[in-house]
Length: 208
Image (cartoon, rainbow, N blue to C red; front, side, top):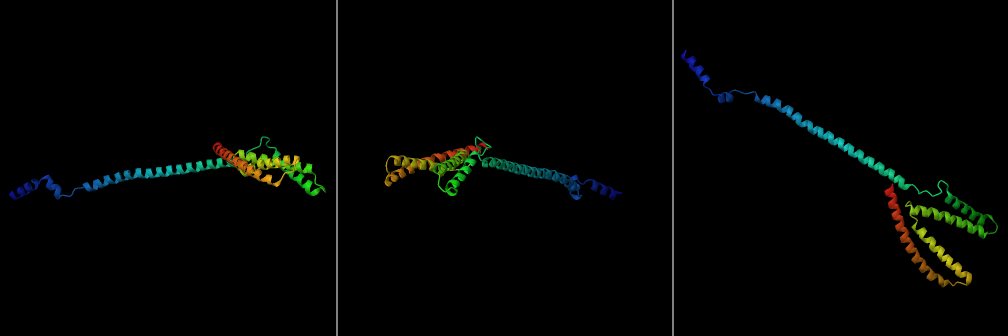
């Protein structure tokens, strides 16, 4: 009886810390069970962020595509030729066509060259060509700087020679100072027309 009592007392005298060290506890299982949902909850926001990032990336790409489409639509507006005041009647094109037919008739078909018909045909072609090129140039559609700067120079040079030749014989050396004057006028007109075309082109892009 004494041995049994001592054994029971020995067992009861063990401290709780010793019991905790001697007996395995079930805390790791519970902590692992709790850690698993925490990991799941920690992974959910990241997945949500990734999906949201993908969605924002898709939105940004769609926005870029929309802006490109708008730019393309604006580019089509820039490529359109400016309309004439008498649109849809192609008056300038008809003048060019009639003038070309008149030149062919006056030179090739008739036996004798008719100066009046030839001059009228050339004038019709010149008027139609100048109107189309000037409208395209001032509208910022296409640059015709060299042609528009050269036409006044040729007209002035020819007018001076014709007027001087009507009163007296014009020597050939007169063409040398006239050529220097032609170069000066051409360079001035070229600069002015070039700047005017660049301004019109910039305004046309902003308007589109």
